[in-house]
Length: 357
Ligand SMILES: *Cc1c(COP(=O)(O)O)cnc(C)c1O
Image (cartoon, rainbow, N blue to C red; front, side, top):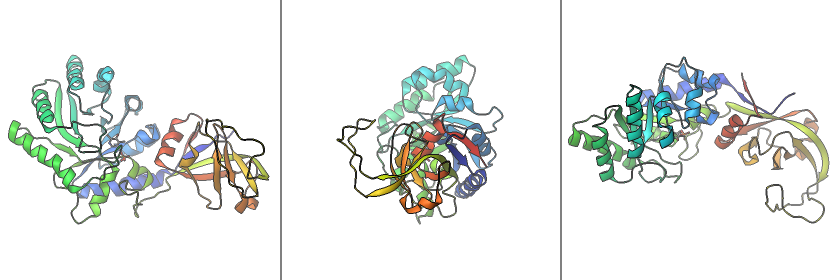
């Protein structure tokens, strides 16, 4: 039996990793490589681990960090602000975590102390995207004063996350604020923050601008750019990288000429929505054995531009094959590019096989 599968071209992936890591290193920027989009699949994590320029392997979930192969040479970073209830696991399975709540940091200190460990943290600042981060500079300074007295938590840096919730584009003036805070901390506490983390794949476009990334920003956390070969502030392709590392394949289980308009009175579909149809006359319709339980069809892009996705339900995706009908048949496979969200769901679905070439 062949399930739908997501195929990773590991040669192309390795190229993407090497190209971008070298470029960042040349710009004096260390890398936390993010593994959440492929659910930290151990085969891919091992490839990431071999790239010399990568300093940290990072994921938003402890479950994924726990599943990392145990022969890794990189430090492990937790990206999502920890749950108070997972503090002990954070200390056990991550070397470093991103934080914004003093209550949680106190708990990390307590757990690390009990385990005889030192846990590193980066304090996250909210510079306008309105997801995670400390919002006021007075609170930041209060937190730092308290953290510097802790025994088992070591403050190693400051960070920001942008373009995730509020879609705010990282600009030099915004990132400069992080560098300014570093200097203020140095003045007030005579303390050197060694990592200043200026965001994710949406900060990459700055490398190609005259102004560049502000001096002093020395860490980026990169997920999407490595896997999809794009920067994410404007969604532009990076010419030197592959955009087709991943291919989703699904099998045709029905292939018939049918009308484009359903027949009878219309109610609501399987997902409680009231669909609207356009009459395109009779068409060659094919059904693929893949559906919303695996991936939302909005996240699939047919490689063959003659094909058009009509819609999907939990386990079926319907395609208009009219313009390519002689080239496909029952049992044949259809190939797709996937978006970031699509990749995330393919690697999460137990019904999608993971293959590597
Ligand atoms: C997911 C995530 C990243 C990686 O973002 P990309 O856009 O995939 O590069 C970086 N930092 C944090 C905090 C994240 O949650």
